[in-house]
Length: 168
Image 1 (tube, rainbow, N blue to C red):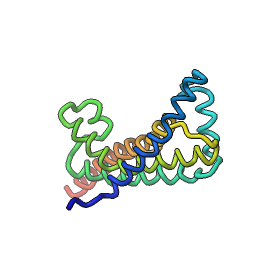
Image 2 (image 1 turned 135 degrees about the horizontal axis):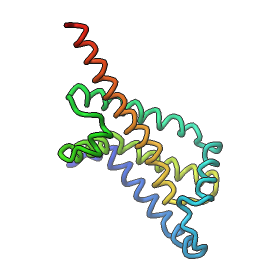
Image 3 (image 1 turned 180 degrees about the vertical axis):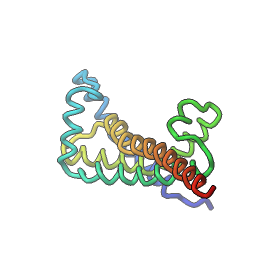
């Protein structure tokens, strides 16, 4: 008998919620002709989420992503890998492996971020825009993660290089 993982439960909940909110979102787009994403109204609503219910997540989620980024950046440095963003852009050989490790590290957090954004939208605006949640949630996680993973790698490599020079 296969066990049910936390990731699969989170994924199932996210897919169910997105599918439940999609018909209303499509109806709203057809009715108004407004795609909403990256419009002035969208950015106004993002700012409204900063002061509404769940605003603490705008601090906690990026901090957790940064901790994971630091941990993985230190691992990269220990393994002699180049900084994350540099390798992701320029190293064709390792690009797939790095993207996979990043996705694996932050997958559950991104799912939770999307779900929390959907909940916040419902509590603040009494409606849900799934496209916005699919954009805002991952940005809260992926950007801090990628930046701190790259910086932690550079810092760890420099620090180990300085230590090696001090020993000699």
